[in-house]
Image (cartoon, rainbow, N blue to C red; front, top):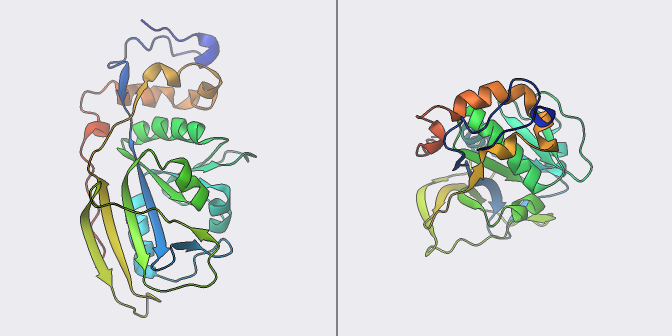
Length: 246
């Protein structure tokens, strides 16, 4: 049986042994990414080199309510935390935490925070939104990708996502093409792909209650406990696919 010390977790958290199961399934990792086809460009001088209003609506429909992970450059390009999402920013020089904004100095720390708060939010996936280096950090863990391909060759690209999806390993579960319009500068396609041989991540619940990492989580422990003690955890449910916007 595991007992968390009051030094690590503070008052009100006495046992992790009473929480069942002690080790449980963690949320899956998904990517959402827009790139050019051809060229695999995802950015130009820290900005998107296209204007696609329809794709932005899709991005919101997928990510709102979830924990999203990004790098500092992506965060700076946004200018502020994305609303209705918990934003976790990976940087070797973390800033100050704020409302809907947490900083992590490593992908391991980012995933630790994302697991904890996804359980609180009862969300079964964590969404990585970029940029290029951040996608590489989680390349061995993501099992789903929301992929937008913009049909235009861009000359200004300086950031790329050149991941190839072998159809022997990936399944296209949904896709739709869009024509150029007044709202969308270029024609594009949105695809949702699932890894065929999915694997799951598990973590011991005690990891959230011990060590220096627990200090930032302490105010949220009561809600976290109530979530993991429920038998009908949404974290175990099948992810529902968002509808592609018309």
